[in-house]
Image 1 (tube, rainbow, N blue to C red):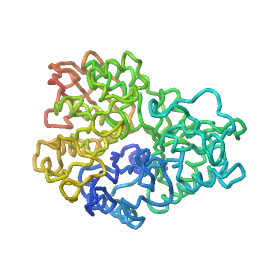
Image 2: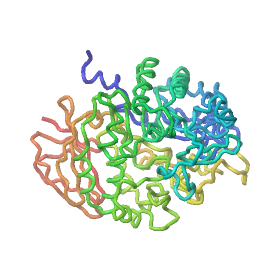
Image 3: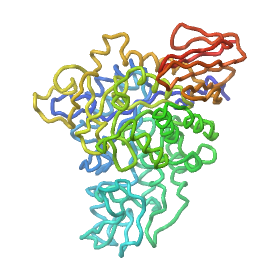
Image 4: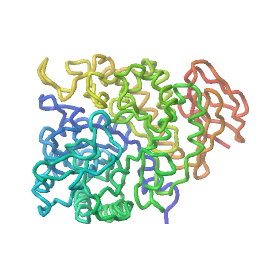
Length: 537
């Protein structure tokens, strides 16, 4: 048995700070215009200094790049343009030395159509690996949900060589794996075990509900879909006790929590999509009611499990859980032009652009996200306020290269002037690491302080939430754990606002400044103001 404080290291993911990055857009060391593992290794000290505790690497496997690396042609290697497996393991060793854990994307809903399994499967019903995929002799009637509406018209594609239809949820170049097949499940476990053996501590699993759906064709084998997660979780934990599974499950709470399992025996972590979307609706209205309602509806989850909170992830900013009217409200405020929207459900912009680069408001949003119950997750460049590049197609607009300095190519690459980068930079390059490092009041230095303070407040990750005040633009909430309580207060409005917390305590100690507060006196917040306090008796 261990005490509560000891548990914060055993269940490390409950008080982590996660940082998501794409190796190919992070730092290029060989001047070919594409980031690489050597470059990431050189920037590990920057990430450790920022204070993050876990790196999440987007797909870095060999791929024909139909879906930005999510169409994988070999699960047991790395893309040549990013380096070698040796470079990967050197990066892992360096990260571990600096106290950083590393997780990678596990994308096993589908493969690339160029994967050797599919190339073999195409040769006929009796071919090796044919039953690794979902086939039909006649195109089934009806369609499942399309992930890329407007780009794909059907979930079924005809293969000339196999003379059969195959199922794909994403692009037609990404045939879905038949996860009801025990042989496919064994392959998934083998993939998971391989990267754990190299030193990663877990996986972010892409599009979990699609992975588990029983889409195995009219004559396919049907199994309990959740058994796949239970088997995978048990296998990875046997291989490495601290292994974690972080799942992308964009569903309402009543359906999403099923993926934690009955006792935390499936996913350990899940992205909190309902809270993220409610936050943007509240920001658009400058009224905390949607956020307070969602916070109050958050269900109890197993002790071993955790929500992962975020402001912006690598895909479009999805608003699909809002009603059409609510979604239109957010579009009108944060992305009124059609070019700023995608798939009718999301936004292509990064936060600073949506907020007209009002840094006070940007800081408010990150303070709010970091104080929410759960584990904060950052997407590369958020710490300096990077903008998107709407010239990049679709939801890749937020995945432009990291901006390190005011030098050519924003310091991302030493490629010659005019050389083509893996992805074009935005016009606005004013946000960069080098300049902000020299400015003590910069967003970067503020973010470092916020991360440090958040890591010192495990109550936000472990505690019991209480909404103390939710009226108009002001939200106040507390998180209590192990006899200690922290309080966060945020003003989403453009004017000063006041409240009285009336807490039964002696003092509220300021955690983000030096202005302690009497809990029985009126507390006034400036426009877009925020305060964190620790309750003292």
